[in-house]
Length: 313
Length: 279
Image (cartoon, rainbow over all chains, first blue to last red; front, side, top):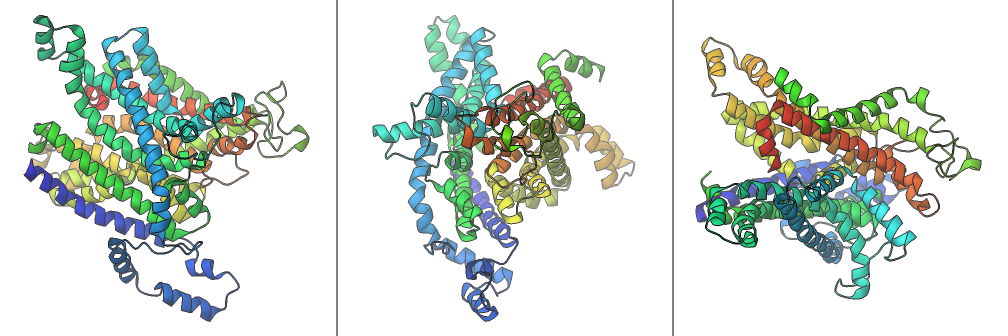
């Protein structure tokens, strides 16, 4: 296990480095002069030149990258062009909201997806199975923003049950709970579909295995066969996908947070893009990508621990 | 091939998907003849009227016919979906061929793909759009880049399993050069999984392009685009929900069509893939 962990860790470092290069590169092909953007179109040329030197934008690109990397490693991602606040502070102020949203979504996805898949597998080729799998296939073809809008239309505007947007405090308080229901459910839809499909196919595979047949043959109750012998093994691939989905939820949060005016990192990234506040965009993209890589790493290590065969590949 | 054809034509879901796609392609191609109104010209007296005989799916806030805009929007969505997939497929397949075939290139190429995979797809596309600025070709590039690593992985695994097979080894033995082996022996035998994967990628690409437009990073007004139409209709959700609802349904049916087609192609071309893809 240790050798596997070390090997997997060694693979992560170059990827993280590559991520930093790519994020830096993307933000430096931006059309238009960022200095002009801050200084305004009427600023005299010498002011612009001075600001450029102050920001270090007159230096060669590789020097700029190395200083960007050096500062990023020390937790300094520069300053917002708009608010002048440190990018790290701007992001950290909003990160709890995003973490809350994605975590609640993940809980919904797991608590809904696994039972759905389980029931579909056990009741294979009945109307329950067809309905559940038809629903998840349809869900995978729906644009998430449209799901959000239909949900707002029905539950907020027509029925008036839930607020249209915003965050109402911590999730364990009634007002906070009311605010998170729609965005979390919308964000969870894709993951519910993926997790239920995976649980179903995993269960179907495992239910045909010899040890399940043996368990049945020696008279183990059906509930125990399904719950203990089959489900435990079928869930191994599900665990890894749950981890991966967490990363995708962070990406999907950009859309959901924008629609529901959820004060998280995704919405910060979107407003910063529209305001051309590139240091903030850069910081948000970097944060999510690094988190995504670390989640992948954690998932791989967990998988190696759950399924020893993986370690020897 | 004939058994694959039979499997495909008896796959009801796949035929349904193909039918939906062909329907949208025809409607898009003949949009000027089929659409009842001009998709761009505004007519404020008719703003936000509900579905009627004159405007079958109602009108938006500028009095433009929603149905006509959906029909013209089909052109854009199909085009973006197909071209973005083609960009990703071309670059990804090339990367996968090289990585799988030349051992020395494998490490660097696949590490580069890992870097691209380190971003959730939506985020990568948004970041690229933020950098390049909103325009149709940029949407295609942003959406296409995201699918490069997946195509590379599919191709690479095909190459790895093919290159040790006898027909490839014998082609090498009789003196075929590397480009010839790759182009004439390995690539043609990798077409089936790539075709299946492409069909599903078109679906994902259409969804992603719609998200970009929805966020205001895609095609700019007044061009009719489905994602943008859903977004514009948001402000009138209570009095005129159809402005948002119908374009969303159009996206849903198109994407569903490509997903079903992909499912059918997979089952027809390579039944073994069926188990794999379910993982």
